[in-house]
Amino acid sequence: MGLESDKESGAKAEDIIKAINGSLQEGFNFKGTSPNSEMDLGYRSNPSVEDKTYCLVNIIAADKMSLLDNGVIDKMKKIRQAATHLNMPQVIIMTRADLACPLVQQDIRKIYSSKKIKEKMEVCSNLLGIPMNYIFPVKNYHEEIQL
Image 1 (cartoon, rainbow, N blue to C red):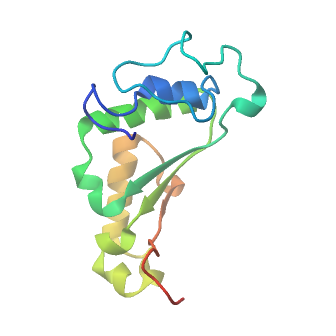
Image 2 (image 1 turned 90 degrees about the vertical axis):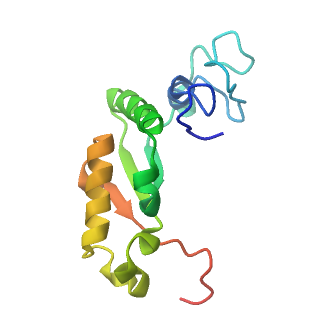
Image 3 (image 1 turned 120 degrees about the horizontal axis):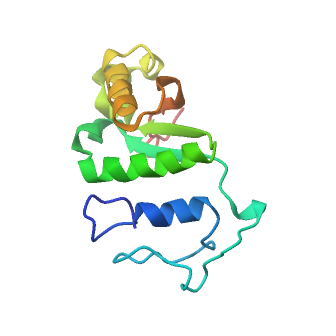
């Protein structure tokens, strides 16, 4: 289950915040209909230090930035605000940079000098409120067989 814009589907921002706080045990099944509560099996009312999350990593496809729905962006902002409140480090891994820019597709070494990638990073930064230096564009190597 991922973040989806519809309020009736996808993981709830409240549940992800509870997971970040360590209140939900590993392997916990999210309900799609309503946020999880203290009455659910596997809920921790007093999570230990080992149960808490210490870094928030968002994975976003660079070539799909324009397709992000406002509902998904709102969920991500809510989760990010909770992480900020906990003084948690946050980064964004921007995947598929090679598909977002033909220049990068030809030569991966141009990933940080590409104007298109910089624009995508700026859009991401403005949408989610994460500083540009915490956004890392990467190329996916799922079909590569040679270095």
